[in-house]
Image (cartoon, rainbow, N blue to C red; front, side, top):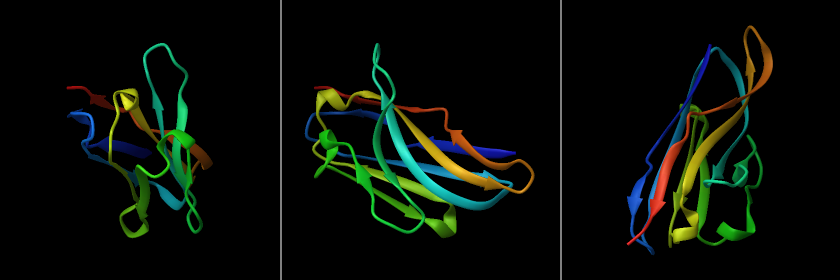
Length: 120
């Protein structure tokens, strides 16, 4: 079994900051790319940022310069630092992990999502 758990969402005023965390655990032999996606009501789930095991991060144009993705491989954790938040950043944020498991091969996993609301 593999678990993917997000935390750190909440309500913040425009211009504020939040830091999301996503920790993976379980039968993991190798953690490959990890990333963040978001879905606003009535919209599809869109990429926010991704980071491979060793390589450069990739960001959606709408968040470049404001969001930073990072990862701690020793903790199997990925973070999303969100600064200068705007109301249009309001969405449920989902963590995604590409994982080589011990018993089920390579699979893609999603977290349960964490709500981010930017409002005054």
